[in-house]
Image (cartoon, rainbow, N blue to C red):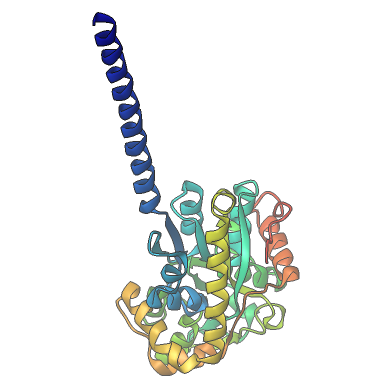
Length: 335
């Protein structure tokens, strides 16, 4: 009897142990399942500019959210200009971003190749304009004047510096007499209206806004300002680490980006209301519909990119000492 009792006791302990292991395994798997269900948050950056219209439309229509599935989510973050977005990329707060080509070059160099371009976004769409009473008729007349750009180190700033160099001029910090003032796009109009700046190098729709709201004169249009208009004004970048860890998410993002590009090119009138709504959400001010219509004429949306223009931009960055070298190999990963 004692042997039988011992056997039953040991058997009971064995069964209890098996049940405990099974229960722990079930709880562990349930925890894993819940973690998987939690999904991934994709952090996407953009500017409230029509040169970033794909982002504006995707955000408004929740197209990316539908594509990546309900378990994942998208966090959209707005920036005024490239350098601030680059900082967010470096900190890991941004995974994918719409950005100007020159900040993209800078990000790649400073991250030692970690930030790469994965798609084109838009070509053209920026101008150099002068206040009506400024007396400026051409780039040479910028001598002694005050010119506004959205931010130091962004695409418009570097393009302006190149224009100055081509006309034997330079900014004050480079020993010249052209004052460069950096301020948010939305405030440049106020500065020009108040006479605090003489000219501005800006992207759309701010260029068309200056023309309509204060009679600004076009000194260099989107074709004259650089390479006959064949240059990117917006590209899409991503962190390599994010790409390697989430290849399917990136693939789906690019698919939605291309679809949205096609939509914009085929449905410009319909898209204007969406674009305007998203710009107003960030800037607290909508854009006159006629201004939007004219602005869109100066921009070409695409997913491809002019590699020669990117190379030229990279050389300007080195020349102006904004980067120590040209981008790393495989900087452009257009698929």
